[in-house]
Length: 182
Image (cartoon, rainbow, N blue to C red):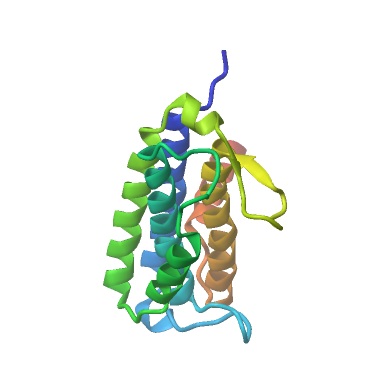
């Protein structure tokens, strides 16, 4: 059987976060204020966003896993959590602080995911009125954390190109292609 569960989700997130960390290390700290266009997050803001977003998800899903109230956000202060996370995201940090935050929040999230049961991942969660879609499985929500990071990592890779840095994944692909063509 081809099964993709908690262990696979956790490991795939670790790979994605590892690639984000390589990018974060390769961009010089003096370029952390770089914005690809007016009105979008800078490199540093994107990295803080990713670190804090996985903290939000850890708190959200860990609280649900430990709770008897399942299947909805009823009784959970989602607005308060989002408000705290957005404030934390805006705090000024050095490159080293961001790297540490990314490593630590990523590993906390991956460890939490690795402990989720099949039943927990299969659970359908109902969102507050007006949300679209009105519900998702927890598996979809957990997978969405990786998808969110990959979306922003793509933005970071474009920013690297704009700075004259060839992203590490592109360099690795070029090496593999050269080996194949020998």
